[in-house]
Amino acid sequence: MGKFAPFPDSGEIQFFIFDPFLLWITENDRIYNFKEFATDPSLSKIRNSAENFFTKTEAELVVPLILNKSLLGIIVLGERQNRKIILFPKSIN
Image: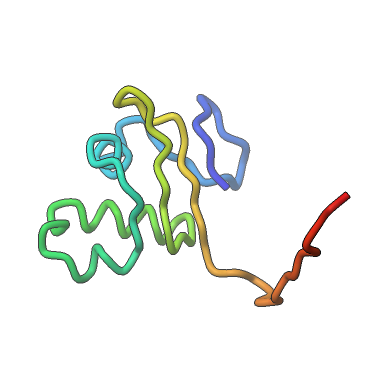
């Protein structure tokens, strides 16, 4: 996964502070699904940057973590790798 770092480790995904999509989600705080950008005409201005971000991170869903109009982080959810169903016991001791 990527991170904000002045000198990222080799092979890691890099994001720049002034990335158009990151700036845009800071101002448009809500959860986004990858498919929305292909179908919603109101998102056409940011479509290319969004698709680049979703493709690079292999995301299906993006949840921005914003406080006082500042982007603190992003929860990036992608497709499950093993597709196993996990059942949790009713009580965990």
